[in-house]
Image 1 (cartoon, helix red, strand yellow):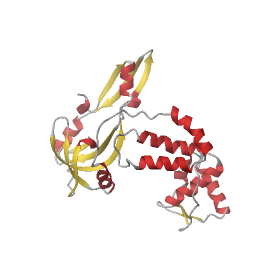
Image 2: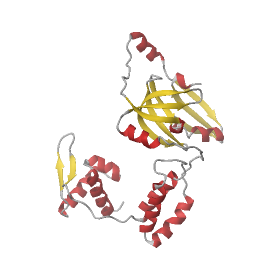
Image 3: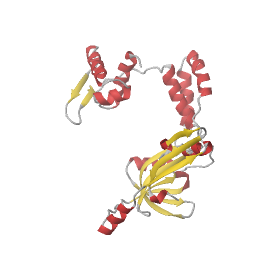
Image 4: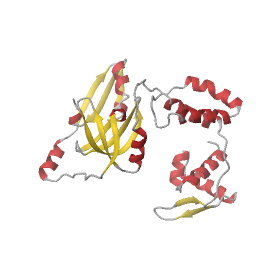
Length: 272
């Protein structure tokens, strides 16, 4: 990133929230010393910055200071359009119409020569999302309730059951062409991952108490659930399948021609 682009990026980051030198250094992928020099340069240029000391401190912009709208460069435009291209492969999202309109708006504000420059790059880039056929009518309210740390009641259809669950959702994410919700289930007494397209209803529920281990027997039973160490040789097709797993996908290494080894620790409950 060029220095002038980095200075603009620092101002835009500070327009959103306060930042420390370390957090800015991580975002800009430079050293903390470089960020401090940039802050000094911005102050000398007249940008109204101030610093707050303490654990919650960092750099801030004076209230009311705003940069004029900025044009995207070719790499920034490519980044946004590529991300949108991946989102468009999901059959249902909370942003069904917006993902198309924002793409067209971006293309319309870009200079014609820039569009011609990034078009062939977009043609060669692909975010691999498996083709699925489903609808997620409760995805939008689920996202809102999750953001507000609410409990929910949902009628959930799994492989073996069709029943009501009381959940406290922590995270909603997209993977493998599906939308998932990570939540604590009072029915199961543990945190689990649920497919959002299998939710037939989502309504706000009264907060529930999450039970703690109450007895010495419970604690000893918990200690007995020691992870098992797994070593599995994989073919090429097996490697392609396992590397997509979000938990053990990084545990694969090549041990020969067309042969790989997956080595990791798994909870005993996951062995089946």
